[in-house]
Amino acid sequence: MNEPVILVVDDDPQVLSAIRRDLRSRYREDYRVLAASSGDAALTAVRELKSRGDALAMVISDQRMPSMLGVDVLAKVREIYPIARRLLLTAYSDIEAAIRAINEAHLDHYLQKPWDPPEERLFPAIDDLLSSWQAEYRPELAGLRLIGYQWSPRSHEIKDFLASNLIPYRWLDVDRDPDAPGFLGAIGVDADELPVLVLENGAVVRNLTIGSVAECMGLRTAAAHDLYDLIIIGAGPAGLAAAVYGASEGMRTLLLDGHGPGGQAGASSRIENYLGFPSGVSGSELTRRAVAQAQRLGAEILTPVVVAGLSCDAGYKRIALADGRELVSRAVITATGMTYRELTAEGVADYLGAGVYYGAAMTEAQSCRGCRVFVIGGGNSAGQSAVYLSRFAREVCVVVRREDLKPTMSHYLIQQLAALPNVRILPCRVPERLEGQGRLQRVWLKSLVDDSVSQEDVDALFVFIGTRPHSDWLPPSILRNPKGFVLTGRDAAIAEAFPRIWKESREPMPLETSLPGVFAAGDLRAGAMNRVASAVAEGAMAVRLVSDYLART
Ligand SMILES: Cc1cc2nc3c(=O)[nH]c(=O)nc-3n(C[C@H](O)[C@H](O)[C@H](O)COP(=O)(O)OP(=O)(O)OC[C@H]3O[C@@H](n4cnc5c(N)ncnc54)[C@H](O)[C@@H]3O)c2cc1C
Image (tube, rainbow, N blue to C red; front, side, top):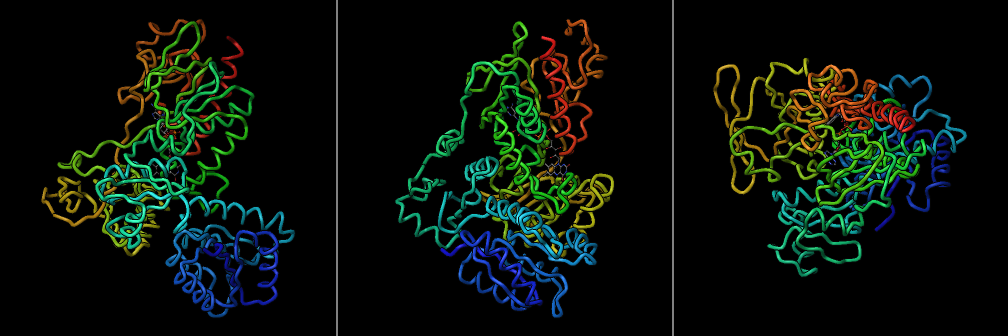
């Protein structure tokens, strides 16, 4: 297969040749750099690439061109290559338009002319975008392949696991992918053995479980040391930040996650309010960077490792793993976050992974091409997922209990949804019953206004409602509020049971739980702000407090 393409579009021959020259000087080993002198020529080139099955990694287009504006070229390219990275080249006077275009047309970045020296003003941005494209791109024929049925819960579980552990794979749906039947015959796999994984070296792995896949992928699940300064449980934004800061402070730091790194944020298609990413950043990209940063600084990361209990023995914290092993640390940060509440509609359990998904919009979006999908919930996570799904699905219906989205969703997302022609908001409704043959096909929605019930055809339904903290595994000595969120600092100290539990002469520190030396950060904590930035801040702050705690013991 040909190398992926970087396409540059500019009507000014001098600028076109300068940027092409600079890009070639740095990327020609891995990418073909093509040039087009107008929007029309660019779109013709893009359609040709598509018809040949070539990969398009990035398009860089000048904004001011006579026949078509750069943002329009980039918007059209997105319809053909949804994950190609899109950059606008602007003059200083057009920067405001470029920033507007980031919001309206979901551009990835803008570059200001001139870009000299390219080492400082061009290549860092392009490097970043190409590496995030590489992480999302699934080559047609190479690499890891997962073959199965779209509506199979086990296929969904494995897809979700690979995605959350940032393992690129190509998904082949035996019912829809024309290559799949021939490929199955060639590798000698029967349809009733699906799903199977085909490794890069051609080996076929059957009877897939999370454990067997983790082993095949070489994920580390065994700790390197007997004793740690700091063990962090949960590798969402709070845990990842704690790992970065713990390791950078020189603590022997271990980070554990029961699924894969990223947590809820890892499921986000585009985080637009995290400082330093003006065009937004996907959760998987933020996670990829954070994992690399934590590891570079010396943190050890183990996934999938589920923590089942915690106890304290002469100041040492003993962490019981679900598989029976135990780890020991001088201090602990628990950052196990939260998850969605279960949908109570009749029939939900029958279609889990077969049309009903909790979160997981990123994992299943590409499989929803041409489908009619429902998003249940009116919060930001629901809004963001609806925007993302609208790129693939024929129609996205957002079902909300309230009359409108304003009380629960950020303004920018409400505006984005309103601008999408294939998104419908269905207010004052709840799903009452689900039905289908072997997969979800119909949903009955009940009106909260007059109790009437309507039946809708549906291919997939994504649930984003309510919050449930991951705190069941904690010992009773870690006090929680009635909803199960962990009390820390002053909130713990004023709880009724606190005097019976806390035997220190000092008060708990701000993020410390009612068990000395065990800290909580992020969404798990009572009073948390439920944002990526606040989770990251608490992870960092918890490390500072851990260091004070360790200095005292
Ligand atoms: C789809 C979506 C979009 C969002 N978009 C935005 C946004 O744009 N901007 C924004 O600011 N916020 C956004 N949020 C909210 C934000 O992602 C969360 O506030 C943030 O992820 C909380 O981080 P955390 O580290 O506290 O917990 P989490 O992200 O919940 O991570 C907890 C981790 O702990 C692990 N874990 C749980 N129990 C155990 C156990 N027993 N053993 C081992 N590991 C365990 C889980 O597997 C998980 O990885 C979004 C959330 C969602 C779901």
